[in-house]
Image 1: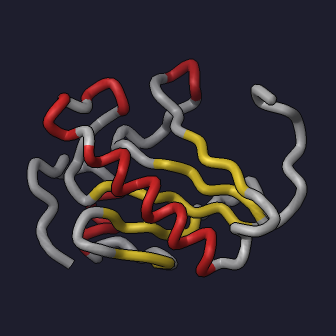
Image 2 (image 1 turned 30 degrees about the vertical axis):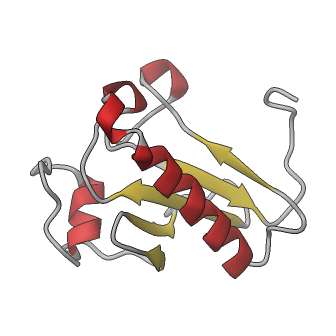
Length: 122
């Protein structure tokens, strides 16, 4: 695991990516690191995190747009690896306090493994 450029010294996700905090890694490539959520909201709940620290979806600059492609491609791989691609899964970004973003390092939630409750949006 390499150094996270522009990392926040107090960022929990940066520490996980660096290997200084433990995690249950499920996927890693040059751009993203994915691990199981410690408080899962579904039987499968994985956090997919860009290795370059970005606080929030609103902080992405135009030249960083490929970060979304990397997150979604990783989600495809992980859904297949964890055998939930066929049954369906949910992808969620939380942005800001009203959306309950608790860790200020951009991340994508992948949830699945059971029928999801509620419609969220439809």
